[in-house]
Amino acid sequence: MSGNKKNKLFKSGIFGLVVADALGVPYEFTSRSFCEMNPMDDMIGFRTYNQEPGTWSDDSSLALATVDGLTYSLNSNKDKIGEEGSDLEILEIIDYEDIMEKFSSWFFDAEYTPHGNVFDYGGTTASGIYNFKDGCEAILSGGVSSSDNGNGSLMRILPIAYFIYFLSQKYSFSMDDQMKAIHNLSSLTHRHRRSQMACGIYVLIAIELLKNAYEDGNKLGLDELIENGIELAKEYYCNKKGFKKELPHFERILCGETKTLPKNYVRGRGYVVASLEASLWCLLNNDSYKETALAAVNLGEDTDTTAAIAGGLAGIYYGYDDIPEHWLEQIAKFDYIDELIDDFANSL
Ligand SMILES: [Mg+2]
Image 1 (spheres, protein in one colour):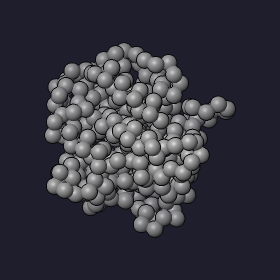
Image 2 (cartoon, rainbow, N blue to C red):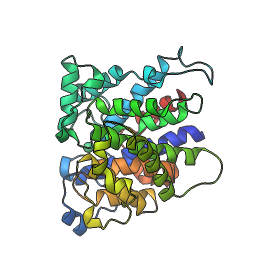
Image 3 (cartoon, rainbow, N blue to C red):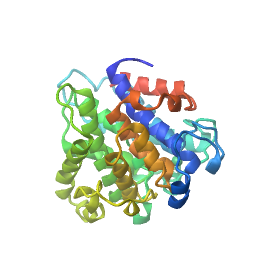
Image 4 (cartoon, rainbow, N blue to C red):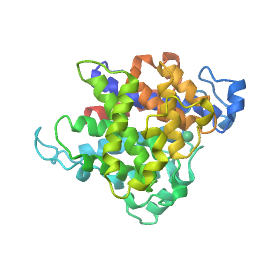
């Protein structure tokens, strides 16, 4: 693996997501009480999907397809990405149609999979892909009903935090454009405002973590960084028509109540708000990558996705070297993932 600080930061978050996803796959759909009686304490295999240890699922597949799609967007817009300080429209350079083609190639042809088969997928994601295949514009393909608010876009949104953070080192974007880019990426499969907003909150937190990890100067604690991201999200969404009515759904998260919630109030469910809250709860109540990822799995239910969402942020905060080496060694197609991430980092 490259020792380059920037590439390593990309690997901390993306492998953080993939490893935690793989950790959760064998326990997906297990109950809280089962997890309490049989807590997961290491990478295992089999059980729910009968997969080898280190097998990652749709969460990682779609995040990696996004990594690949954003790399393509950057490489095919080199003429627009000019000198530092020049104007750049972030919304113009992301090729959402291409990203959606890549999602389709995962769904129909098992691209971006560990062993050439798709064993796990969400209904709203599948519907979005079918809509796209039927001719719908990519950013209009996602479901807009309140029942389309599963965690299917939140689990794959992390790569855009890198995209925005590293491009904004060279160019200035309006907050509106940054947020629209995140919302559009969610909308490929999940177009309801609530899903878009969950992605927005998560990415703003991720960008705070990236800044803290990458820039010299005083390092902040995880609680403070999460709080800073949430404050930015509050500032943005409280003044946005269309999002205001979604605010009550995020009240516990936005009011900073997540950390002190008793465990029985926290659910590792597929509902996007519950999933975001559960992931943040695991981050705020643990002190290492390993503890955070295991805590997410041991909440039960949508274990791989809660863990992937928490694991991406935990990877960025604690760093690549904090991800247990023997977990990384078991990850299927490690070199393939490593190369996709290097290509992405090198294009930014
Ligand atoms: Mg999954």
